[in-house]
Structures are given as C-alpha cells and as structure tokens.
Image (cartoon, rainbow, N blue to C red; front, top):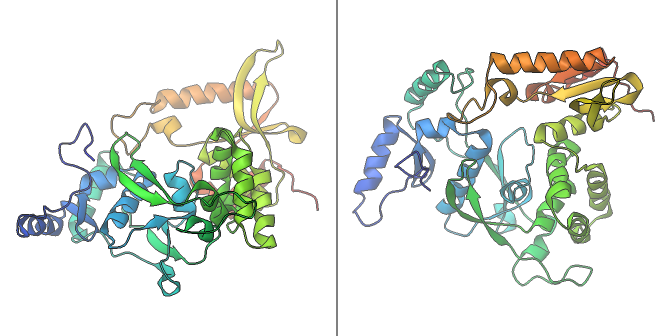
Length: 374
C-alpha cells in the first residue's frame, strides 16, 4: 500500500500489539488535521487524500470500508463494475454492497472523515493556491453506503446458489486487487461476478449511469456478448430484461472515454439524435486533418467532449504527464480552425455541462442538433 514516492502507506492503521499507543497517536494526528479518518481504525494523510482523483478516493473508501467491517463485505452493482475495471457514472458517490439480511438494506451516510475540518480547510486552501486542487473550497466526502437486499443476480452470486436458468453453474463472488491510478496496491476486496454486477446497473439504472461501463465491456471484454447473455439470464423480471436489452443495444465499442460515453447517453436521454463516433475529417486531397469525438451528418456538425486534462494536465496528480497550459490551447485552436476550413461546425462541452441538463441542452440547441422523431 506504499506508493514509490511516499514512505508512509496510504492507508494507515494502528499496531495491534502496542497496547493502544499507536491508535492514540493516530487519533491525535487526526485532531491536528494531519490525517483523515476513513473508517474505524483506518486513516490516511490529509494531503494525499485531497490530492487523489475522485476515482481513487472511491477506491480508497471501498477498501477502508471493507476492511473495517466484522463480516465480509461483497460489493455489487456500480461499485463492483468499477472495481472490475468498468467505470460507472454516479453523481452521488456511493458504495453498493450486498445486505446480509433484509433489515440491513437501505442507504446510509458515513461519518465525516474530518476530525478537525477547520485545519483540513487550511490544507485545501494551500493546495488550491498551489494549483493542485480546484479552488471551490469544498472537501470531498466519503461515499454513502447503499446495501442491496435481493438484488438481481443475488441468488446466483450467493454461496450454495442454484444454477442459472440456462443450466450453467452459478457464479460466486470473486476477489479483486484494488489499485490506484499510479499502480499503488491498496488491498483485495470481494465483488459480485461481472454478470451479477451488470444486472444491477443495466437492469435498473438509466442509460447515463451504465453506458460508460457497457461501452468498456463491449470494447475490452473478449466475450462481451456471451457475458451479456449470461447476465440477462439472471434477471427475474421482463421489465428488467427489457431495460438491460436497451442498455446493451446502446453500447458502442468505439467510445474511447467515460466522457464520450456519458455525453452520448445524455444526448439520447435529452431526446436529441445520437451522433456518429470517431469521425475522420479529411481535406480535399483525402488527408486526415483530425478525428473528432462526435459528428452529425445532417448538419455537418463535429463536437468534442473536453476533459480539462487536455489543457491543464492532470491537475490533482503532481508529476503526471500531458499537454499543459497555453501550448495545448494553441494546438487545439489550430486543430479546430483546420476543421472549420473544411466547412464543418464545432461544438464543445465539458463534464459539468453534462450534469446541468438545461445548460447542455442549450449547447446542442444553439448548434442546431436535431431532436429525435417519435
């Protein structure tokens, strides 16, 4: 759990054999704002916690939660998909776990990790001044916990379950290693197998939640359609199977990023015509000028989802590579000018636009994107 650049492990726990001395020391460090308390008996450096990406904080939160429970935790649904390497987009960070009994089900918020929030906010301000954090002044919270009882695939995922309806053996939970983006290994956790995880998301959630994962599975899994078929067989109701089928039919292996997948799903949910993906813009001689994320043929409009990394580098991950600042802006301006010279329009949006539907719809309407008929 130790990153090459850090001598102290990311997840810090007291020593069990020292009579409680290390536990008291960690509690005092949390009182000073040096540590955040992620779960009972589990801490992390405040600075390192704040500098993690949202995805990495979710991974850290999952491992800390699982390790702090007396009973084994099995992650399901969106959390299982994410830990298996297939990203799911949720506006509210949530850990999805299987409930051990009906009375255990429901959604609960976790206790704030900030024992001394005043001191933590000073660290936030310092990191914002250094350009290492977005300067909104807010502190990230721990994900809420949603415990699912009798979720799709639960019978097959449980120990001793019967076979699926096609007669195949039931999948059991699996253990996966959880790693940060820089390769730091956090530990191992139990997750639902892929078919059961797909069921809970694709069979019940809107397109905008599951499309990034569906696209990634279709693109990266060697037996994607077979896996989808197995997952579908586990769903108990026709309504869930219909929703699952719609999600899988919408999946597109050409999508190259979570932002592209989310954009496409939101465009569809808002009632607009879904664009072509990865469109090649050629000059009159047939030479490739650019490849754009999206294209609407009827109105000759290209479009791009702009991740901030394109212009600023990976802001919260010091030392990460990538184009930074003014040079990237100039290159992108030249690229867009070259596209426009071929007679194409260009629309752009960023992630916050996708979570503010009225603003995103206004961007599409401003550029004349047609609505779907019927």
